[in-house]
Image (cartoon, rainbow, N blue to C red; front, side, top):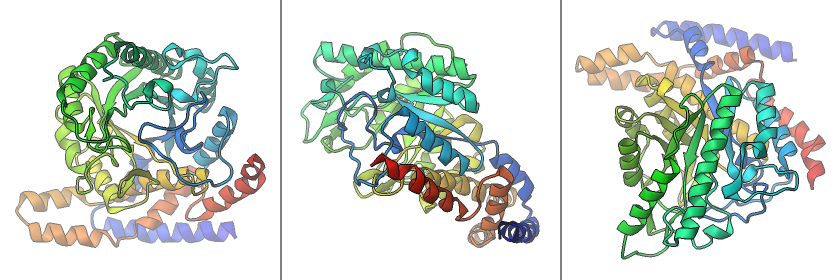
Length: 422
């Protein structure tokens, strides 16, 4: 039966290849280009952002659902990740949080973490020849109970979080050095007020001083890429977030740092696709946290939505894929967590493929020639070309199940492994 399916996919691809060739698109080049794109999967989907250092989830974050099979330790989480990677075409890496340290019973507080606390993760990544990215965890900790960290008015608490940021950067640099690929080290803090503040300036002044201290140590850019990440609001910080988009754009440009754009961290009518090429003119690097906002929640599993397609189109049309790192960021405890990884990552890859299958030169010539009628007509017609047939062929070439065949693998894993974690 598999042979029949593979044969049908091959036949469908040949037809799709010819159909795209008729409009000036080389599907082979698109497949070859897509195969080089790396997507960073985030470890915190696998265990509902619980981590291994005993904190209770806070910081304006919440995970709903109690689907069975949540990873309870590093070995289980890495096993889940192995299964997910086997079902996702192309190249992947892993995005870590500081709260996923493994200390063999010798627990270190966040400000005392060292690369050795992530040795198992680095060994695992080295065996698979993948890179690791890193995030400091500025939440789910007693010293973040009042919702403030790097902008805290208490110098002692602020110092603790500065030290945590310094430790995180050193860990990321060690990861990059060990694995031979720079680790994107991201800073996101939950600091803000639930209700209307009187003084919006002072917390931002404190945050600036903290970040300057955090980034003071010079680390090799061959090993680490620093980014800062904004948010519109969170639970408990609905009225004011210290690290807003405007603040971090200014900080990143003035301090020559990268900027992390999370798709769920903006007004519902905003699209980060509109920001990408503008920011790429001024920033040293852009990190994407690809997510899906639904009403007030910013972290639903990524699907092939219009917003995702717009994001991919801007990356491809602007030819900035080599300057942008793509990472996923969502958490859903109501569905199979391994399946969530696969659905989200495959959606991101599909969006990129569909963008690469557009006759961009032809569309650009129409635009430059003032033929906006032709541009609109062609853009609409592209939506119904057989991208799915190219996608299935791409999956087969990458050695992963095409279409819905991957779900059978996840179901078997759930039956034989995840069900035993109850």
